[in-house]
Image (cartoon, rainbow, N blue to C red; front, side):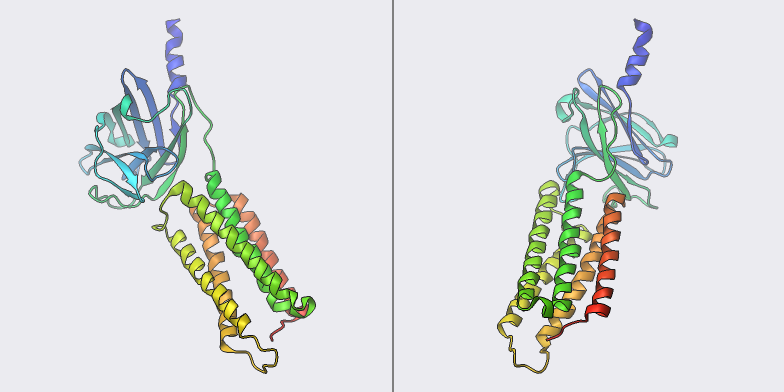
Length: 323
Protein backbone atom coordinates (compact mmCIF):
# COMPACT_ATOMS: atom_id res chain seq x y z
CA UNK A 1 0.00 0.00 0.00
CA UNK A 2 2.78 2.43 0.94
CA UNK A 3 4.38 1.82 -2.46
CA UNK A 4 1.43 3.59 -4.08
CA UNK A 5 1.48 6.59 -1.72
CA UNK A 6 3.93 8.69 -3.81
CA UNK A 7 1.82 8.06 -6.90
CA UNK A 8 -1.35 9.13 -5.09
CA UNK A 9 0.29 12.30 -3.83
CA UNK A 10 1.64 13.13 -7.28
CA UNK A 11 -1.82 12.83 -8.80
CA UNK A 12 -3.38 15.02 -6.13
CA UNK A 13 -0.63 17.63 -6.44
CA UNK A 14 -0.92 18.33 -10.16
CA UNK A 15 -0.12 22.04 -10.71
CA UNK A 16 -2.29 24.36 -12.81
CA UNK A 17 -0.18 26.11 -15.43
CA UNK A 18 -0.38 28.84 -18.02
CA UNK A 19 2.43 29.83 -20.39
CA UNK A 20 3.73 32.25 -17.74
CA UNK A 21 2.76 31.04 -14.26
CA UNK A 22 2.29 27.67 -12.58
CA UNK A 23 0.31 27.33 -9.34
CA UNK A 24 0.43 24.32 -7.03
CA UNK A 25 -1.50 24.17 -3.73
CA UNK A 26 -1.16 21.36 -1.22
CA UNK A 27 -3.45 20.75 1.74
CA UNK A 28 -1.41 20.22 4.88
CA UNK A 29 -2.29 20.24 8.55
CA UNK A 30 -4.11 23.55 9.19
CA UNK A 31 -2.32 25.27 6.27
CA UNK A 32 -2.28 25.43 2.50
CA UNK A 33 1.12 25.29 0.84
CA UNK A 34 1.33 27.38 -2.33
CA UNK A 35 4.10 27.12 -4.90
CA UNK A 36 4.28 29.78 -7.60
CA UNK A 37 6.64 29.25 -10.52
CA UNK A 38 7.23 31.75 -13.30
CA UNK A 39 9.24 32.00 -16.49
CA UNK A 40 12.97 32.75 -16.38
CA UNK A 41 12.44 36.48 -17.03
CA UNK A 42 9.82 36.93 -14.31
CA UNK A 43 9.91 40.27 -12.48
CA UNK A 44 6.82 39.43 -10.44
CA UNK A 45 4.08 36.82 -10.56
CA UNK A 46 0.73 36.80 -8.80
CA UNK A 47 -2.17 34.48 -8.20
CA UNK A 48 -5.59 35.43 -6.88
CA UNK A 49 -8.47 33.36 -5.59
CA UNK A 50 -11.61 34.13 -7.58
CA UNK A 51 -12.77 34.84 -11.12
CA UNK A 52 -12.00 38.57 -11.32
CA UNK A 53 -9.34 40.92 -10.02
CA UNK A 54 -11.56 43.21 -7.95
CA UNK A 55 -11.96 41.75 -4.49
CA UNK A 56 -9.60 38.85 -5.13
CA UNK A 57 -7.22 37.59 -2.45
CA UNK A 58 -3.93 38.21 -4.28
CA UNK A 59 -0.48 36.76 -3.57
CA UNK A 60 2.38 38.57 -5.32
CA UNK A 61 5.84 37.02 -5.40
CA UNK A 62 9.18 38.38 -6.63
CA UNK A 63 12.94 38.35 -6.12
CA UNK A 64 15.08 41.43 -5.54
CA UNK A 65 18.39 42.05 -7.31
CA UNK A 66 20.15 39.97 -4.64
CA UNK A 67 17.86 37.00 -5.35
CA UNK A 68 16.08 37.42 -2.02
CA UNK A 69 12.43 36.25 -2.18
CA UNK A 70 9.52 38.48 -1.24
CA UNK A 71 5.80 37.88 -0.97
CA UNK A 72 2.95 40.33 -0.54
CA UNK A 73 -0.67 39.51 0.18
CA UNK A 74 -3.10 42.16 -1.06
CA UNK A 75 -6.77 42.63 -1.91
CA UNK A 76 -7.49 44.01 -5.34
CA UNK A 77 -9.85 46.99 -5.46
CA UNK A 78 -10.78 49.07 -8.49
CA UNK A 79 -7.91 47.50 -10.45
CA UNK A 80 -5.40 48.62 -7.81
CA UNK A 81 -3.90 46.92 -4.78
CA UNK A 82 -4.66 47.74 -1.16
CA UNK A 83 -2.10 47.61 1.64
CA UNK A 84 -0.84 44.34 3.09
CA UNK A 85 -3.48 41.89 4.28
CA UNK A 86 -3.09 39.75 7.40
CA UNK A 87 -2.19 37.06 8.13
CA UNK A 88 0.99 37.37 6.09
CA UNK A 89 1.96 34.17 4.26
CA UNK A 90 5.23 32.56 5.36
CA UNK A 91 7.84 31.80 2.71
CA UNK A 92 9.21 28.29 3.29
CA UNK A 93 11.28 27.72 0.17
CA UNK A 94 12.54 29.65 -2.86
CA UNK A 95 14.55 29.09 -6.00
CA UNK A 96 15.53 32.30 -7.79
CA UNK A 97 17.13 30.40 -10.67
CA UNK A 98 13.80 28.75 -11.52
CA UNK A 99 11.62 31.70 -10.38
CA UNK A 100 9.87 29.59 -7.77
CA UNK A 101 8.57 30.61 -4.34
CA UNK A 102 6.77 28.34 -1.86
CA UNK A 103 4.75 29.72 1.04
CA UNK A 104 2.14 28.60 3.55
CA UNK A 105 -1.10 30.19 4.70
CA UNK A 106 -3.56 29.12 7.43
CA UNK A 107 -6.45 27.25 5.82
CA UNK A 108 -8.98 29.29 7.77
CA UNK A 109 -7.87 32.48 6.00
CA UNK A 110 -7.95 31.16 2.41
CA UNK A 111 -11.23 30.76 0.53
CA UNK A 112 -10.31 27.50 -1.15
CA UNK A 113 -12.55 24.46 -1.58
CA UNK A 114 -10.76 21.14 -1.18
CA UNK A 115 -13.54 19.09 -2.78
CA UNK A 116 -14.47 21.26 -5.76
CA UNK A 117 -12.68 23.07 -8.56
CA UNK A 118 -11.29 26.48 -7.55
CA UNK A 119 -11.20 29.42 -9.95
CA UNK A 120 -7.95 31.37 -9.89
CA UNK A 121 -6.63 34.42 -11.70
CA UNK A 122 -2.96 35.04 -12.42
CA UNK A 123 -0.77 37.92 -13.51
CA UNK A 124 2.80 38.11 -14.72
CA UNK A 125 5.21 40.99 -15.26
CA UNK A 126 8.40 40.69 -17.29
CA UNK A 127 9.22 44.37 -17.78
CA UNK A 128 12.62 45.95 -17.26
CA UNK A 129 12.17 47.31 -13.74
CA UNK A 130 10.13 46.57 -10.64
CA UNK A 131 9.08 48.96 -7.90
CA UNK A 132 7.44 46.91 -5.08
CA UNK A 133 6.05 50.11 -3.57
CA UNK A 134 3.97 50.62 -6.69
CA UNK A 135 3.64 47.46 -8.70
CA UNK A 136 3.62 48.17 -12.44
CA UNK A 137 0.73 46.84 -14.49
CA UNK A 138 1.10 43.19 -15.42
CA UNK A 139 2.25 42.36 -18.94
CA UNK A 140 0.25 39.11 -19.06
CA UNK A 141 -2.83 37.86 -17.25
CA UNK A 142 -5.28 35.00 -17.35
CA UNK A 143 -7.32 32.45 -15.41
CA UNK A 144 -6.66 28.97 -14.08
CA UNK A 145 -8.61 26.21 -12.37
CA UNK A 146 -7.20 24.14 -9.52
CA UNK A 147 -8.42 20.97 -7.86
CA UNK A 148 -6.99 19.25 -4.80
CA UNK A 149 -8.34 15.98 -6.24
CA UNK A 150 -6.00 15.96 -9.23
CA UNK A 151 -5.35 17.56 -12.58
CA UNK A 152 -8.26 19.48 -14.08
CA UNK A 153 -8.75 20.66 -17.64
CA UNK A 154 -7.98 24.35 -18.02
CA UNK A 155 -10.47 26.65 -19.68
CA UNK A 156 -9.23 28.26 -22.86
CA UNK A 157 -10.21 31.71 -24.00
CA UNK A 158 -12.05 34.49 -22.15
CA UNK A 159 -14.90 34.05 -19.66
CA UNK A 160 -18.39 33.51 -21.03
CA UNK A 161 -19.52 36.96 -19.90
CA UNK A 162 -16.68 38.54 -21.91
CA UNK A 163 -17.78 36.57 -24.98
CA UNK A 164 -21.38 37.73 -24.59
CA UNK A 165 -20.20 41.30 -24.07
CA UNK A 166 -18.23 41.06 -27.31
CA UNK A 167 -21.10 39.52 -29.27
CA UNK A 168 -23.55 42.17 -28.10
CA UNK A 169 -21.11 44.99 -28.87
CA UNK A 170 -20.45 43.62 -32.37
CA UNK A 171 -24.21 43.63 -32.88
CA UNK A 172 -24.66 47.06 -31.26
CA UNK A 173 -21.79 48.96 -32.85
CA UNK A 174 -21.17 47.15 -36.11
CA UNK A 175 -24.13 45.25 -37.55
CA UNK A 176 -27.12 47.38 -36.53
CA UNK A 177 -25.47 50.81 -37.11
CA UNK A 178 -24.30 49.67 -40.56
CA UNK A 179 -27.89 48.71 -41.44
CA UNK A 180 -29.20 52.01 -40.05
CA UNK A 181 -26.67 54.08 -42.00
CA UNK A 182 -27.29 52.08 -45.18
CA UNK A 183 -31.02 52.69 -44.83
CA UNK A 184 -30.57 56.45 -44.38
CA UNK A 185 -28.09 56.79 -47.24
CA UNK A 186 -29.50 54.51 -49.93
CA UNK A 187 -33.09 53.47 -49.16
CA UNK A 188 -34.97 56.72 -48.58
CA UNK A 189 -36.67 56.72 -52.00
CA UNK A 190 -37.43 53.00 -51.92
CA UNK A 191 -38.89 52.98 -48.40
CA UNK A 192 -40.49 56.43 -48.45
CA UNK A 193 -41.30 57.87 -45.00
CA UNK A 194 -40.75 54.43 -43.48
CA UNK A 195 -36.99 54.83 -43.81
CA UNK A 196 -36.91 57.03 -40.71
CA UNK A 197 -38.81 54.45 -38.65
CA UNK A 198 -36.39 51.74 -39.75
CA UNK A 199 -33.41 54.01 -39.06
CA UNK A 200 -34.59 54.89 -35.55
CA UNK A 201 -35.61 51.31 -34.73
CA UNK A 202 -32.22 49.92 -35.69
CA UNK A 203 -30.37 52.44 -33.55
CA UNK A 204 -32.77 51.85 -30.65
CA UNK A 205 -32.01 48.13 -30.85
CA UNK A 206 -28.28 48.96 -31.00
CA UNK A 207 -28.52 51.13 -27.88
CA UNK A 208 -30.39 48.38 -26.01
CA UNK A 209 -27.76 45.79 -26.97
CA UNK A 210 -24.94 48.15 -25.92
CA UNK A 211 -26.52 48.85 -22.53
CA UNK A 212 -27.03 45.13 -21.92
CA UNK A 213 -23.40 44.46 -22.87
CA UNK A 214 -22.22 47.13 -20.41
CA UNK A 215 -24.39 45.74 -17.62
CA UNK A 216 -22.96 42.25 -18.16
CA UNK A 217 -19.33 43.35 -17.92
CA UNK A 218 -19.85 45.81 -15.03
CA UNK A 219 -21.77 43.18 -13.03
CA UNK A 220 -18.93 40.71 -13.41
CA UNK A 221 -15.92 43.03 -13.20
CA UNK A 222 -17.10 46.04 -11.20
CA UNK A 223 -15.42 49.37 -11.97
CA UNK A 224 -13.91 49.04 -15.46
CA UNK A 225 -13.33 52.69 -16.35
CA UNK A 226 -9.59 52.43 -15.72
CA UNK A 227 -9.33 50.28 -18.83
CA UNK A 228 -8.74 52.23 -22.12
CA UNK A 229 -11.18 49.99 -23.98
CA UNK A 230 -13.94 50.85 -21.51
CA UNK A 231 -13.03 54.55 -21.57
CA UNK A 232 -13.36 54.69 -25.35
CA UNK A 233 -16.66 52.83 -25.07
CA UNK A 234 -17.98 55.48 -22.67
CA UNK A 235 -16.95 58.23 -25.12
CA UNK A 236 -18.82 56.43 -27.91
CA UNK A 237 -21.93 56.05 -25.75
CA UNK A 238 -21.93 59.73 -24.73
CA UNK A 239 -21.46 60.93 -28.31
CA UNK A 240 -24.16 58.53 -29.47
CA UNK A 241 -26.56 60.10 -26.97
CA UNK A 242 -25.68 63.44 -28.56
CA UNK A 243 -26.35 61.92 -31.98
CA UNK A 244 -29.80 60.82 -30.89
CA UNK A 245 -30.64 64.29 -29.55
CA UNK A 246 -29.33 65.86 -32.76
CA UNK A 247 -31.44 63.47 -34.82
CA UNK A 248 -34.59 64.50 -32.92
CA UNK A 249 -33.77 68.17 -33.50
CA UNK A 250 -33.20 67.57 -37.23
CA UNK A 251 -36.52 65.77 -37.51
CA UNK A 252 -38.34 68.66 -35.80
CA UNK A 253 -36.67 71.20 -38.09
CA UNK A 254 -37.36 69.23 -41.27
CA UNK A 255 -38.73 71.40 -44.08
CA UNK A 256 -39.79 69.55 -47.25
CA UNK A 257 -39.59 72.80 -49.25
CA UNK A 258 -35.93 73.48 -48.44
CA UNK A 259 -33.45 73.73 -51.32
CA UNK A 260 -30.22 73.18 -49.38
CA UNK A 261 -28.84 70.81 -46.73
CA UNK A 262 -28.55 72.55 -43.34
CA UNK A 263 -25.41 72.32 -41.23
CA UNK A 264 -27.00 70.20 -38.50
CA UNK A 265 -27.73 67.47 -41.05
CA UNK A 266 -24.11 67.40 -42.20
CA UNK A 267 -22.86 67.31 -38.61
CA UNK A 268 -25.19 64.37 -37.96
CA UNK A 269 -23.84 62.49 -40.99
CA UNK A 270 -20.16 62.96 -40.25
CA UNK A 271 -20.44 62.44 -36.51
CA UNK A 272 -22.29 59.21 -37.20
CA UNK A 273 -19.58 58.00 -39.58
CA UNK A 274 -16.80 58.89 -37.16
CA UNK A 275 -18.60 57.15 -34.28
CA UNK A 276 -19.12 54.08 -36.45
CA UNK A 277 -15.39 53.87 -37.24
CA UNK A 278 -14.40 54.59 -33.63
CA UNK A 279 -16.73 51.87 -32.36
CA UNK A 280 -15.37 49.31 -34.85
CA UNK A 281 -11.80 50.22 -33.82
CA UNK A 282 -12.71 49.73 -30.16
CA UNK A 283 -14.30 46.36 -30.94
CA UNK A 284 -11.07 45.26 -32.62
CA UNK A 285 -9.06 46.54 -29.65
CA UNK A 286 -11.36 44.63 -27.29
CA UNK A 287 -10.80 41.40 -29.21
CA UNK A 288 -7.04 41.93 -29.03
CA UNK A 289 -6.93 42.49 -25.25
CA UNK A 290 -8.93 39.31 -24.49
CA UNK A 291 -6.45 37.17 -26.41
CA UNK A 292 -7.55 37.31 -30.07
CA UNK A 293 -10.07 34.42 -29.93
CA UNK A 294 -10.85 33.20 -33.44
CA UNK A 295 -14.54 32.83 -32.63
CA UNK A 296 -14.72 36.63 -32.26
CA UNK A 297 -12.24 37.52 -35.01
CA UNK A 298 -13.97 35.42 -37.68
CA UNK A 299 -17.47 36.95 -37.45
CA UNK A 300 -15.97 40.42 -37.00
CA UNK A 301 -13.90 40.07 -40.17
CA UNK A 302 -16.92 38.67 -42.05
CA UNK A 303 -19.15 41.55 -40.90
CA UNK A 304 -16.55 44.16 -41.87
CA UNK A 305 -16.19 42.60 -45.32
CA UNK A 306 -19.96 42.38 -45.74
CA UNK A 307 -20.41 46.02 -44.70
CA UNK A 308 -17.76 47.22 -47.16
CA UNK A 309 -19.30 45.21 -50.00
CA UNK A 310 -22.81 46.44 -49.14
CA UNK A 311 -21.77 50.09 -49.17
CA UNK A 312 -19.80 49.67 -52.39
CA UNK A 313 -22.91 48.13 -53.96
CA UNK A 314 -25.16 50.83 -52.56
CA UNK A 315 -22.93 53.63 -53.82
CA UNK A 316 -22.55 52.20 -57.31
CA UNK A 317 -25.87 50.45 -57.93
CA UNK A 318 -28.39 52.38 -55.84
CA UNK A 319 -26.81 55.79 -55.28
CA UNK A 320 -27.00 57.96 -52.17
CA UNK A 321 -30.14 59.94 -51.49
CA UNK A 322 -29.58 63.35 -49.90
CA UNK A 323 -32.58 65.51 -49.10
